[in-house]
Image (spheres, rainbow, N blue to C red):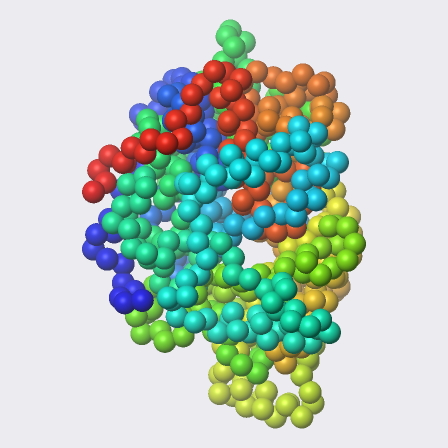
Length: 585
């Protein structure tokens, strides 16, 4: 791969503007900057509209992300559901929502969760889109979504699989070995494949929107934040594209409510600054159109607050929340090296066995599990970022001792002990990430200014049991110790951890069944009429789990919502002209 140091030509400028330059009114105000908000900002700006983007988190450039535990611990914020307490600052990068039933992790920063996700493009089963949870207009528009809207997203995000020209990854070999205990001939050939990733694997002095992108160094830190600039996060494509077309971006601005003006047809967005020099004073900006893209939890919280302040939102707001059936499990101290723990960026030049991107490969059990799609799941390899490596190593060894299940023959006990003494156990461990189908019956609520997410018996649902069974069997193929997510242990209430929250402002046929319609337009209360000029276009509108990494589904839905908005309003979105970002080479 050559040098792994970030080249001198990879120089980045801030996209954000000082809050003092914000105008009193825009054609469009976009709240959030992830796969919903980032896409909305670009498309509205390309349609020639004046656009303002409000993002609660900070702007992070390659090189800014914390690579030690001490530093990442300073970038943690947490909301404790149902309790009048929080931790950290609203602009911290790692945003946790913790309840007795579940823990959700999302990203807070310019680019949203794309900053700390594993950048995987994986399609949900076509049968999922035909489920009755979706409005009929979505079910009938599958062809357009899978061609036009997908095409627009792929033209901007440019996914690629891990190249054969890069170093071979031990964890890919381990994924193949892990299927050896199944009584299905050539199972690896049937279900194992490399995944398309939002990652750049060749140096680009400037990409298609004028941003420099060095090639991936295979450091394994995708979910800790890419300090190389190779990850195709939204601040590498859609957001600079929006700025190049005239959008104004403001970070560290926390939106509280969206309300109708009493003197005009405008929307009034109430927000406060959360940067270190702010006083917490509330400010407002007005817009003809307001588009929420603050994520499943973020957009739902804003609409719940707005409803309490008089905005006519469906009584379904907050309902239909899903974890996307996320499951974490680990094969510890197996027979062969997996090398699935990340390295600091400046150490990669000396690394002979890189971990590669966080996720590279999927065991797609959807292809061999019989029955309806609700029984399906996928399992992917997962590398641990270097900023949590020390805690991971210690915690994994302790969990393996206390709750681990030995999936190797008794005669290997001595060798397993020797591997621990030789400090090989961690590098012979492989974490799995699974996604499945929960019942999407979580409830996000607001009472006395305190948010909560409740969900009775979430962790006892069969999908979580089934995924863990397959992870345990895969651990047997590797002859390691299977370690469940410790929070999912019965002694801790079978609590679920998710990085893929969905729902809360789900699509429906009317306000009786959803919060928005098929195009993301917000229903006027419980009626089948929509309010003019307000949309939700992020993971909050997904009405059920999708059973795979959801970013591709969310992005396609967002592209569709913006395509339909332009059609309704007579806008022309120029998808073909790329304007280099001012100041780019």
